[in-house]
Image 1 (cartoon, rainbow, N blue to C red):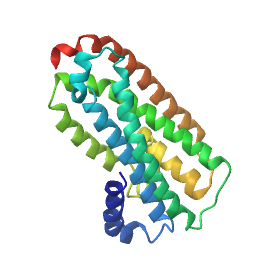
Image 2: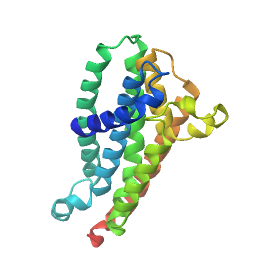
Image 3: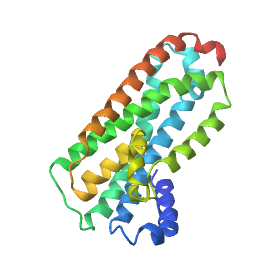
Length: 223
C-alpha cells in the first residue's frame, strides 16, 4: 500500500527537485502529498472499474445491493490512503510547517470531496467496463493524462497566472493545491473553488448513482 506511492514520490523527487526544489523549501512535502492524493484517485477509480466484473460469481449467486461492490473498492483504496497519510505525517512532523486548528478539518473535507469524485466516476466506469472491456486500457491512458494535467510534481507557479482559472477547472487540481495550502502552508484555502469542487463532485455522485441503479438491473446479461 505504501511502497507504490512512496517509490513514485522518490523517483519524481530525484528527477524534478533540481528544477523546482530550489525555489520551494517545502517541495518534498508538496510532492509527497500530491503523489498520495493522485494515487488515491488512480487506485480508487481502477478498483472501481473492475468492481462488478471481478465479483461476477458473487453477484450472480447472491442478491444484495450492487452498490456495495463499489463501496468496497473505495474502502480498499481509502485504507491505502490512510497508511500513506501516516507516512506523510511522519515527514510532516519533522518539517518546519505551521499547524493551524483548521488544517485537519479542511483536509478532511478535501478527502471527502475526492472520495465523492471517485465514487461518482466508479458508478459510470463499473457499468461501462462490463460492456466495453477495452475501457481498462483507455482509463489507464486517462489516468496518465490526469496526472500530467494536475500540478503534482510541478508547482502551480510554472503556469502563467492567466491560465490558473483553466487549471482549477480540474477538481483534482483544486483538491491537491488547497490541501497543500492548509496542511503545509497553514493558510486558509480558496473557499469559492472549494465550494465549486464540492458541487461538481456531489453532482457527479448523484448522476452516477442514478445511472448505476438504472443500468445495473440488467448487468448480469453481459457477464
